[in-house]
Length: 415
Image (cartoon, rainbow, N blue to C red; front, side, top):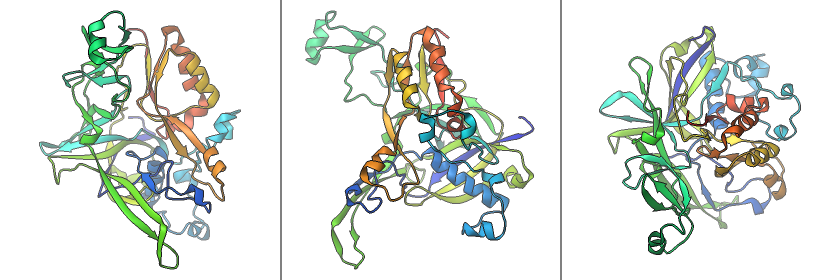
């Protein structure tokens, strides 16, 4: 461990159901056309959500937190040293000129990792298993025992028996000597695999595997996330039923050991600059925090650990770049990556800017930014690896990497 940084494992266990907002809300601004009556929570918190939570918690740890923001000015308390003056302004990345244009200071925070899942069971309460999203080009084998990369081959003219049996033509997945029909409608990306184990007795990591091709420990989202549906009606200002106020809201719970012999929660790695005001973190720090659109409650624990990275030891299919977090790319950069790649397995997600005031419908749509979802995979020819990495490593994305976005694992030819 270096002298100027300390590293912590931060765990967040939902106390009950939670709701993390995304693109859709029940209604924003004065324009009724923005109202939605069916809204779904995101399964994972955005990196900006956990960043805001941890910045607030650092102020509590240092004794500088004020519930009324005006009190900071009244008491002449300068908090930028602790939490920085960071503001995520994605619009500036499209017209990036100089790195100094961006506010990248996050105070005592050096970096946070992507948010992943942890699992704890009753057999060994000191052991945490850490899980993250599978790459989109991997699927369970036919016998559901391992994860394998999809190998595409057009066998339309090679195996007429299979084509007849499936009553279709086109591409099939090849696993060893067996052919399996690939149906994009049933292709399942909602799977997580175990990255490593964390032992709370000695604060050490154990790497589970270096090669996902041989990996057997994986879970479906449906094994972890429980949907919670709320249906109701909004009451108007005159205390009468609003005939247009019916709504349906989907939030989530995580399975826990009250019902099963296992507990699930969220976690991430936090690195902080060494400072005597953070002395309280030398021992396990525990608190209850609120996050998300509904101020959902979570049990927070911050535990000091030895330096480590979540994904350093992972190896995937050769000649691929796998996104280990949601990733933002400026339009020109994304276009150039597509031109230098053979194929991209990806899904897009919306990221709404926070400070939208007095906006019209078109303005709202213009302020939605597209992120490539974690698990997306870029396939390339070996001589294009450096071209693509150069784009991903452009310093305009440094601040995104510091807060847990734009993380990837690159594999060359037969590494």
